[in-house]
Structures are given as structure tokens and as C-alpha cells.
Amino acid sequence: MFKLAVLPGDGIGQEVTVQALKVLDAVKIKYNLDITYQTGLIGGCAIEKTGDPFPQETQKLVAQSDAVLLGAVGGPQWDGPDKKVRPEQGLLAIRKYLRLFANLRPVKCWPQLIEQSPFKKERIVGVDLLIVRELTGGAYFGAKGKKTVDGESKVYDTIEYSAEEIRRIVKVAFDLAGQRRKKVTSVDKANILDTSRLWRKIVEEEKTNYPAIDLNHLYVDNCAMQLCINPAQFDVLVTENTFGDILSDQASVLGGSLGMLPSASIGEGSALYEPVHGSAPDIAGQDKANPLAAILSVAMMLRISMKNSAAAMAVEKAVDTVLQQGLRTADIWTQGSTSVGTSTMAAAVIKALG
Ligand code: IPM
Ligand code: MN
Image 1: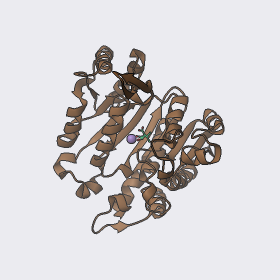
Image 2: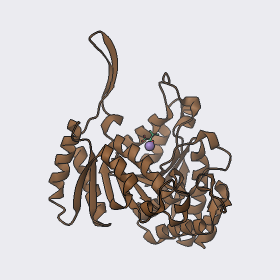
Image 3: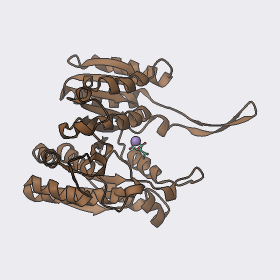
Image 4: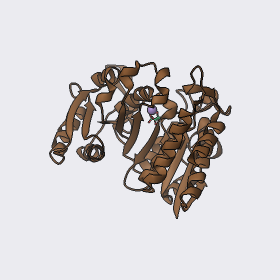
């Protein structure tokens, strides 16, 4: 039996997770899968109930699970520079706790959404890339603090990486490129940062183990520009935590919407699946959110953790079908399409699954 921990979190995280689970229920029946779900708290709702964004009980739950499906965390009520406990800490804590060092964020251009893209059609057609973001290092987890320099008080965050932390993520990228178009672009800021210079050195070392893979290096600023002017050049992009965070939001636009982007975070044990988008408090509870990123995250779970690529492909095909039918949530709406809410979109996916 496959044990899934479900952590809906805050805002639209709740709604999209409920709908994604309905899709998983349908897949479960169709493919005769043996899955059980157990729900837990993370983020702001966990702070409300326990004071901790990643409470003990949730730690226990995810430790006993084969995979985690997460919605999103955060909301204005927990924001503010003076807040010591924040929902986002829950996300960072679970990533660290499950040692989820590799975050996979695939972006492909959905032909059905091309027309409403802010990009020129000919630029984004054929985009099919995978961002491999390091997830448990860098500035997110480096030393932070306050210090006084020449009588002036300063705060600092530190980017930290060990050779081993770099090597393991780089290997994931090379391995995944081997199953794709065999091209890796490593993104860094080696003209400025020591961590980037080490990054580049390790990438070059690892490259010798992957003779069939093409490798190039880009500075992150140049990469941001290349993602706009020629995004179809990319297959696998591998980069450190903060760069990957920023570039994946940027790249999401190529696919049509942040609301379409799934992700998988993998490590040594159970993996975590979550939409790339946040909790969108402004539209929460209104049945407006796009559930497709969460649904596509379920597809990634079926493929990676459950090793059931037939079921994964069926979900992806069903998403393709509903887009083909012209159904659109607000984030991907365009003139002439059929405007639907979160639950109707998910119901259509289930119907398309057959
Ligand atoms: C993401 C999010 C998180 C991150 C935040 C909410 C901590 O933006 O998953 O990309 O920065 O990693
Ligand atoms: Mn982000």
C-alpha cells in the first residue's frame, strides 16, 4: 500500500489539493492503485492550531509516508517583517526534514495557451525544459545574522554550498538529461560568487562521467535573458536554490501560467509534490484557482514515486484534453474560451480520464 501524506496548507492550497485528490481518486479506480491518504497541517494553518508551521504531528506523518502532496503556504495575516514564525518556514523545514535536495520544475509550452502568452508565438513554440533547482542549500539555509561594521549595524544572509551538496544535484540533472534531449545548462554567477566557482568546477568534474551529455554554462543574468529570447534552446537547467526560485517563476510564463506548473522535490527518501504557485490569498476560497498545477503534480507523483507512467500520462493527456476543449480558469482565460472555476476544471479532467 502506498501511503500519501496530504498537506493542503493555506489559501488556494486547500482548494487545489482537494481537487487534485479527486483526480487521484479517479486514477486510483481506473488503474486499481492501492493508495491511502492522511491529511496534516503545514504553514499558516499549522501556526494557528499549534504555533509551529511544521508541527511534530506533521513530521511524524510525513516520516511514515511514501510521498507528500502539498498545496501552498502563506497569507497576509502571517506576513510582516517582525513576525518570528512564518508559514514559509514550514515549507523550508519539510524540505530539510525530508532532505529534498532536488526540485524538479518542468515547463512546457501548451500549444492551447500560446495565443494568450505575453511572448511571441514563434519564440515559445517547442519549449520543453526542466529546471533542476537545488533545494536545501544556498542562501535559504546559510548563516544569517546581524553584525556591526564601522559602527553601522547590518544584517546578512549567506550563500553556502559544499562540494557534495553541489555534486548530488548536478548528478540528478545529468541523469535526467540522459532521459531527455541530453543537454544540460548549468546556471551560476561564477564571475562574482565563490560558491558559483565551486559549482562550475563540480559540474565540469561530473561532466566527465556523462560523455553523451552536452553541457554549457550560463551566468544567471544572461540565462534570464535567454529564457526570454530563445527559451526553446534549453533542455535541463541546473542551478542553486535562489537562482532556481527566480528562474522558475520567470520560466512559468513560457508555459502559459504559473497556475500550470507542477513540481517534484526528491531526496533520499519519500518525495514531495506541489504546484509551483503560492497560496494566492487574493483569490482563495472563491473557486477561481487553477487546479491544473496540483493535478499535474499528482501526475509527477504517479510517474516518479509510484513508477506508473501509464497513469501519469493519462492524467497529463486529460489536462491536454480539457485545454483543447477550451476550458480556462481565470489565470489562463482568453477571449472566446469557456471560463470555469477550480472544481469544474477538475471535474472535466476526471471526465476526460474516462
Ligand atoms: C517556491 C516558493 C518558496 C521558495 C517560498 C514560499 C518559501 O517561492 O517554492 O518557489 O522560495 O522556495
Ligand atoms: Mn518560488
